[in-house]
Every structure is written in C-alpha cells, then in structure tokens.
Length: 478
Image 1 (cartoon, one colour):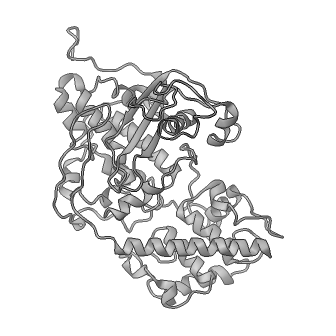
Image 2 (cartoon, one colour):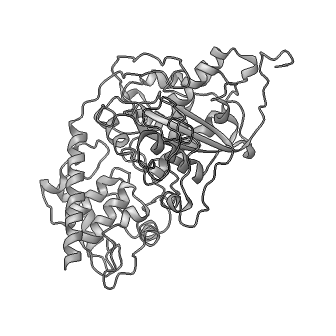
Image 3 (tube, helix red, strand yellow):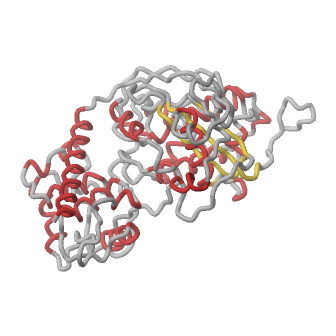
C-alpha cells in the first residue's frame, strides 16, 4: 500500500508538472530578433546582428504535421491520441489524465492550441483512449500485471512519450508489482514499440546523466521559440533559411579567401549552410519540444558530419563518431572548472589544466582532470572501461546562448571559430579531421535567460590529413 501511494504521488506530480508546462507554452509570445551574444573565448569574430523582423512561418514548407517517430511492427493500438500525426508528451499526458479520471474540459485542456490535432474535444479523446483500456488484454497494461493503473502504467507511458529512457523512465514507478512481467526499460520500450508502434528511441545516450540541461530545455521556450527545431527559431526568417540552402557543391578552402569560405559554410553564426534540410531529413528529435540527451548527442554527430560533407569529407573514415570517454571528460572538465565538487578529493595547482579552478581565468582549466575509476563509474555505461588522458584536442567556446534551441545551439561554437580562424585554424581543425568527439554544455548563469552556454568540445582518435592545402603555403597548388 505504501508503495502504491508513493507511485500515486509521483504520477500526480508528473501530471501537474505537465499541466504547468502546457500552460507556459500557451502563454509564451513569439518575439522577433535575438541578442546574438558575446564573442567566444577562443575566437573574437562578432556574430550577426538580430534581424528585428517578424517571422512568417506560413511561407516555409510545412513539416509540423507530418509523422516524426517511425512506425514499425504490427500495431494493436495507436498512441496518437490527439490525432496530429505525432507521438509526443501531450499524448502521454492525455492518457494519464484519462486514467486518473479526468473528463470533459479537464481532459481536453490545451489541445485546441495544436493546429495539427484532429481530436480536440473530450469526446474524441475519450473515444481514442477507451479501446486501449477495454481491449483484452488492455494495450495500456504496460507493466504486464493484467491491470491498467494510473499510478504505474500512466506514469511509465508519460515518461516514455516525453523521451525519457533507461532508469530515469522507470524510477519509482516500476517496482516489482505482483504479476508484472515488464519491469525493465528495454522490456517496456520494446513492448510499446512492437504493440503500439511507439517508435521509442533505441539511441545510446553519451552525455552523462549528471549534466544539468534543465535550463537548456526551458529557456528557449520562455524566450519565444515554441520548440527546438530550426523552424521554431524565432529570429531566423524563411527567406534567411532559403538563402542558406545547400546545392550540394563542395567548397574548396584552397580556392577561396578565409572570408569567402566562412560565408559559404556559415551564412550567419546561427545558420550552417544546408542544416535546416539536414534536420528535417533526419528528424532527430521525436518530440521537438522535448529532445532527449541521446537525441541531442546524435544530432550533433549528424551536424558535424554535415559540416564535413560541405568540403567533400563523406567517406566512412572521415565521419565523426561519438565517444563515451570524450563526453565524460568534457563533463568532468566543466565540473572541475565551474564547481568545487572534486576539489577536496583531488587537490592540485589552482588554475592549472588539472585544476582546481575556482577564480581562474584559464578557460581550459580542468581539461586534463580525470577522476578515479571508482568515481568515473556513475558517468559511464555499466561495464565501460575507465577513461584515461589519451591524446587529443579541446576547444572551449562561449558564443552559444542558453536560450537558443538545440537544433542550432552548437553552430555558434563552430561558425564563430571558422570566421575568426579559417579552415586551417587550430580550433577549427578537429571539427573537420578528428575521429571521435564529446561535448559538454554548461549554463554560465542559470537565472539569466540570456546567459552563455559554454561548450567544451573534446576530440580524440585519428586526425585525418587535410585534402586541401593552405594557400599561405608557397607550395600549395589549389
């Protein structure tokens, strides 16, 4: 009984949190323009000024109402409760409301604001959900205990539809209930995918759970961007996205000035050429309002490889790969730089590459810090070997802002560096040539909606030779 009451409390907390989020979304007002922020720590080029013009989304090709998550397997149920063609946290919340006994306006609250939704009345929503409960066996019996419970099944579904995975998705709501046959995340995920075509991600998360991304999720929305996809970026107009399309022609930095090459690859610091089309081709976020860490990690792999494709680096040996140790080391570096978490256990010379770092102006402070094997374990997948200080490179960039949507937040780190250094710059080289990478994002001032999002990029593995020669070399034959 105590366990059930605890689960009920968790379910209600999740539900009310989602109601609050819905309310916040509906009350935000899109604003035009954006403060493009300060120059980066390692490159001093100034970003473009805000446009200051209203954005008309109607002139962009519509992608918002198309299915996002893949549909695989034989479906015995449909979790697209609002009928908008997407599987999102809203669908999970509607089911949770229904299971908790919400009916009428209390059930359908917030749906009318979704222009793509077909089921906007409480009657239509009830009609969509009821068969999932009354079927034999009921499709919404997610834990397999022959009972549809708001406390267990409702909470599990809402978390899964929000994009939460692993232990986070099942924590405190998947105890060993008598008769339950699905109590692990893989069992629950595979059931929802095979039975309901949920298309839940099987991506591996590389950013450690310890990374606090809470403000990175909320600040863009509070700043007037309805979601994290490119079309939701409030200060980029359709005409500007159109001007940033890529025709597939490879750019040769040996035959262009530094300014010409930077302008070709980055028409602005927020628009890598062709990146909008790449985003909608891959559809990396199952829910554009709530991308998961695993989805963002994968999007950054896709985005970096697109940057490489712009110069013709498309062979398998030139594609960048995610690396658990690089993501963990980037996180450890930021924790060492911005907190005192490790200082007592790991003393050193203040301001050095190893740290501690409090009060230090060294942007790379913490770059060589690696905790003990025991302290590393919570940051790495179970059974992963401990990480050492293998050779590689690091870049620390302060150009990105905390209120920029995830689809383009990374680009200022790259584009400002390219503008300042050119293709052959020391901080640009790894973006094109290193085999493995890991990123950490740190909010420099969580209470400030316009704070910098410090990006620490770690690189390792083979450094592929450039296919181009530097025109400053007298022997260069472009």
